[in-house]
Image 1 (cartoon, helix red, strand yellow):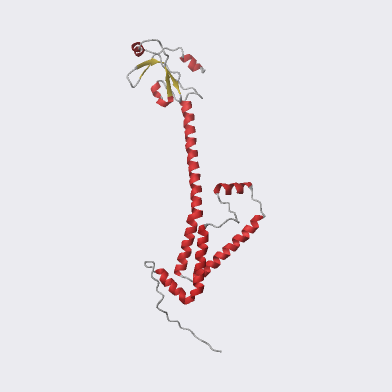
Image 2 (cartoon, rainbow, N blue to C red):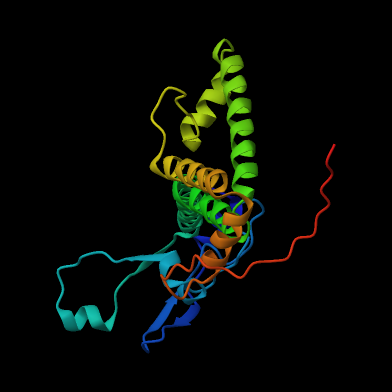
Length: 241
């Protein structure tokens, strides 16, 4: 026990601390003086501390309620070190929960984007390109076939390569691991079907039919199909050998 506290135990109880309820308190405080490394905030009265930072104890005496109301002994203990640690723990738990919820929401969003949103957006872009120019379906099909060949080559090269533990853990946590022999997703199957249908339309109808398809695809307000489209004049030179 510090010497300042030991000397304070023998002083007179002449420090008056009236409570908010009107009770008159007389006593002394062991925290009346700052002690380096132990007491940084001086508290001469219990009201100098918050309610959560102090604890009151009073001895149980075999006296009447009126006598206890007239005078009794009360001890107040400083709980600031415990409150400070509890606050640090509460902040740590709050930060951890925020991090966990953020990480979980990112995982769910990542799955929703890769499984639903991105494939649907890709299909919409391809359908829009085919609607603007039906002959572009051939180009889209060629580009899609080229990407499939690139993925197939990468998959063949990665089969003989062993993944590191860190890479395997990241794929497990982020749910990015793919089974090359697994079934295709419904969105991928639908996207490839749209590309094939567009390519078949472009091959079947040709240049003239592409104009008919483009004309009818632009009219989204009606389900009617008009096969008679106004023609366009084409000038050409024919050489006979």
